[in-house]
Image 1: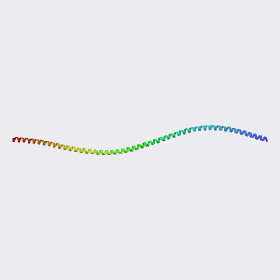
Image 2: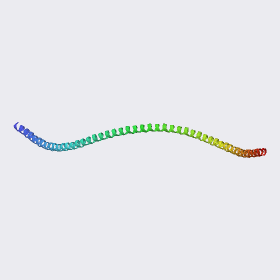
Image 3: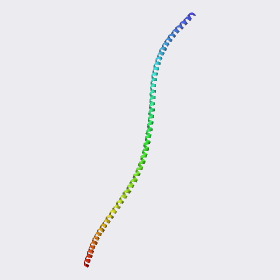
Image 4: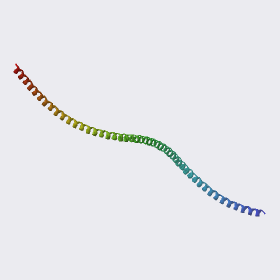
Length: 176
């Protein structure tokens, strides 16, 4: 029995030695694998830190871009509002100037009508003046003729008076 136990123990010892060898090999493989996993984990951790840093940088860049975009949007909004106000101002000025232009056109039409009326009046007055000049010339000519006639008549009356005076003197002289 001892021999059987001895054989069994020897077999168990051999089996245990084999198991131990396998287990030690397994432990070594697992240790190597663990070391490899640790190194991989360290690399992954380093990569994660790098990616985290990149992501933080990108997040900062994105935040700055968003802020810049918001500022640009605000600036565009302000510029649009200013452009709209300027457009409204120009539209108002255009409407005012259009109204003024319409008034000026109306005034111009009125002034042209008045000018034409005045031209007609001037033409009428020129014709009237020409008629007055003609009448004046005719009247002046008649007056000159009458003045000449009066002058001749005066001369005749004077001669006749002189003749009469002369005859009267002669008669008086003869009477005396």
